[in-house]
Length: 94
Image (tube, rainbow, N blue to C red; front, top):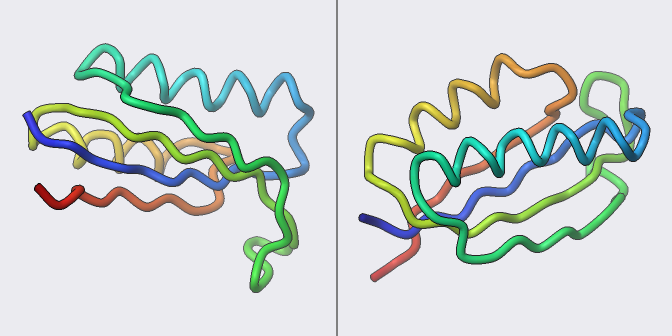
């Protein structure tokens, strides 16, 4: 098992309920394949540059532990999910 950190930026155009449901979808996926160590919700922030003509995004940081093959699957699901503007998954140093 390895430790990872993922940052998820979702569209600020989604209502609060839809945004929460989207983040909960990824939390459930992570819990099914590992354990969540912490969730840090940064809230709505101004983006450094427009993404898909949007200037704001909702930031969420999740630290989790999983098998080394899971982050690739998580990234694949991020890429095909509507409402996700940007993501980043990094392995934490031991």
